[in-house]
Length: 309
Ligand SMILES: *Cc1c(COP(=O)(O)O)cnc(C)c1O
Image 1: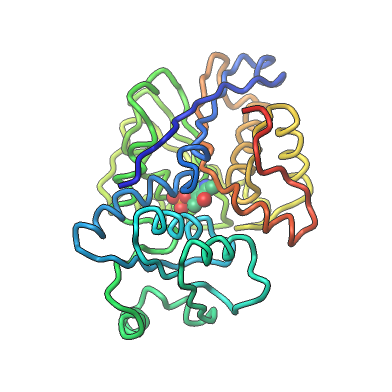
Image 2: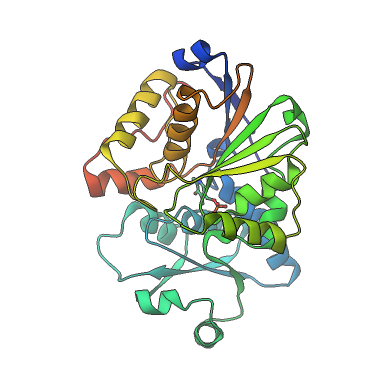
């Protein structure tokens, strides 16, 4: 079983927040555990418990070469004594990037598949071929979203969070958003910031909530205008913002999810979308492991450790 080591919530002090009379706190899920970071900790918790219950000692999952999920599964497997297999989209390249280097060092076996096969990875024929190649495994879907994951992400919002008026989180597959929606208090509004350029996101999220029988007690809203060109895409404006946010708060954000969410929150604050007196709790869902590889690829100098903790 994975146990959270720290649940830290920090209030952020910025001139724009004071000017608009708004409070903003950040829950540092990036610090929940020294090895298994962010929302992935919560998404894996009950998947791993289920694997154990089924007597499986191998976890198999999918991801891109910089995936936070791959990193987290490799770490959790190592800590809890599971073998791990990562089915990675694309070709093997050397030297390994920092994410895959970490995964390999944690004992994960990497299995590369071309983009075509990766696209059909949820189909029975592809899964059969994996079953032929590898011993019995417990399968965790890409990004980790399934019913067990959502049981875990329901634990992100706590009973003590009732005094917040708004909860904010980044959306990838929506599994974290769905879990938080399931724990929302009736007077709260949940804001999901999409990190993907996903035209049907509203529908997809509605379907996800329906599939998992989540009827949020509060209001839920998706903001889809802060994706900066799409998944894992970025623009100089986003990177400048992240550097500035770090300079002012000492908190590193990641360029794929939390940077976009925080940009979106503060943009909404500037535009007067929150009534004075609003008290926002934003989730720092982690992703800092990816920054090393991001800096290598793009020649950027994004910080990935907090200097003021
Ligand atoms: C995976 C991830 C998300 C997205 O979570 P979903 O449950 O797929 O929506 C958000 N932030 C970070 C840092 C992540 O690694």
